[in-house]
Length: 337
Image (cartoon, rainbow, N blue to C red; front, side):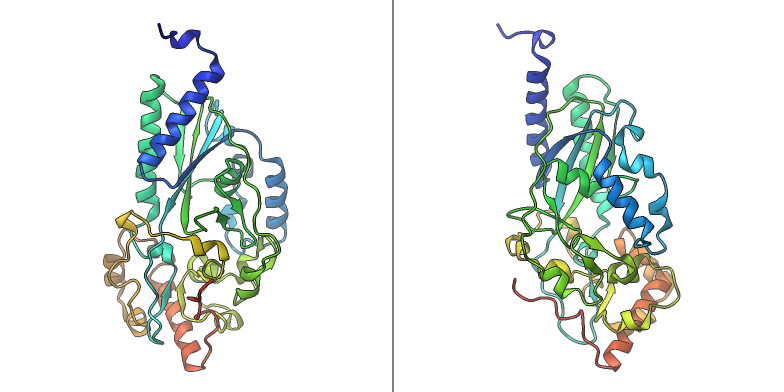
C-alpha cells in the first residue's frame, strides 16, 4: 500500500512537489525553472543600496521605493517560504534592417507586451500549484512589475548568473529571455545558486557605445541607451550620448549581440513575441511623423508604449541627427560572436 501523504517525510513530499512543478513549468513552455528559499537578500541589498547612492538609477526614483520589500519577499507575501524563478525565451532569428533609414528597436519589444504574455503563463503555473497542493496557496506572480529583484532570485535559483552587462545569462541559451517569479508559502526544495561563467571576457563592456557599463556588473543608467530611449522623460537626450547611440529608437541590444554566450541562442516558440508589423521596418521619417492616435493604435499591447508618443519622436529625431552627421556608433551590432 502507498503511504498516506500525512505519513510521508515532509522533505520527500517537498521533493516530489518540486520535481512536478518543474515538469509543469516545462510543459507551459518555460525554458528553465529553479527554486530558492524566501529570505532576506543581504548581499544583494548592500549592492543595490550602493548603486542607488551613486545615483546610477538616473531619474527612476521608483527604484528607491519599497527597499525593504525589494530585498525581502516575505514582506510581499505573508508566510512566503519559496521563490520560484522561470524564464521565457523571446529570441527571433530575424536580422535587423541594415538600411540607414530604418531605426533599431530592441528585440524584446518586437512583439506583444511580455508582461501580459508571460504573466498569463505564470499564473497558470500558480493555479496548477494550488490544485496540486490541494489547498489555497498564498502566493503571487511577478513579471517585472513589482519591487522584486528578479535577476538575483534567478541566480540564487540556479537558472543563470548575472553577467558583466547586468543581464542574466544561462549556459546553452544566452540572455534572450524574460524573467518571472512566483513567491509562495509552500515549502519547496531550493536549488544551488548558479556559478558565474563570464571569466575574463569583457566584450559587452568594450562594445557599449556610451560606456554605460562603468565596471564589471555595474551599469550606469544615466549613460545607458535603453534608459535614454525608454525611461528617460526629458524632452531631449544628452547630445554627447545621443551621438553615440546609432540607430536605436527604443532600447539597445549591443551588449547582448556581442556576448559569446548568445551564440547558443535558439528561436522562441511563443508566436506572440514575433515581430509586429511596423516595429522592425519603420523608417525614421515615419516615426517622426506618426500621430499620437496612430501610435496608440499601432502599439496597443506593445512594450513600445512605455516610451510614449513624444518620447519615440524625440528618439527618432536624435537618430536622424546622427544620420545627418554620419554618427553610426551603436548601430552595427549584428556581428557573429
